[in-house]
Length: 199
Image 1 (spheres, rainbow, N blue to C red):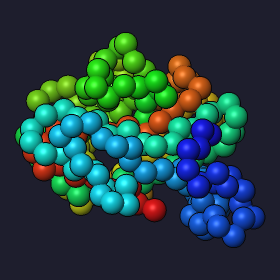
Image 2 (cartoon, one colour):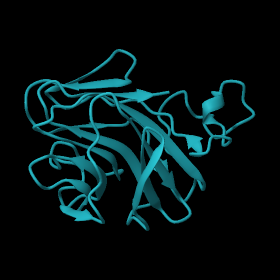
Image 3 (cartoon, rainbow, N blue to C red):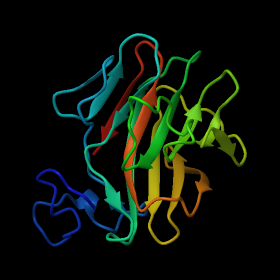
């Protein structure tokens, strides 16, 4: 895991500084600790780096400030995202991307084939579901909505990404993803869409 902050003890479970949520007793695995990076224009993040909000209609992506190397850090990792607000006529795409993801050129997570990214895309206009390289993978899941909590689980063993909604398993649509290092990534569109990383 490439760590850029004081979280360099994330996998040292005996360290007193590590939250109990970071310990592998959680059924989802080890808590993947990150905050949002300084966002692109049109997005703001809270002072603690845990909440991101869109301002004005437009596809804009928030990126995490930590990456996870699936080769150097074997195991199962997870993070939780609360949907504070999602505008029903627009959509969000929540998931992970290759560490090289550039939110300025790759507007919707999972949509472009040029940069590797994998997302759960809720969009009532048709192209919704689990999205990678601009194509949906597997069956379309039900949409997530305001107030719900999504859990994203990354397993290094089969390089997979699974999704849960309100602790209920939804799907494991992505297996053997073609990258060794991922970063959390989240595309918002509605004028006041907002998400929070739950610790």
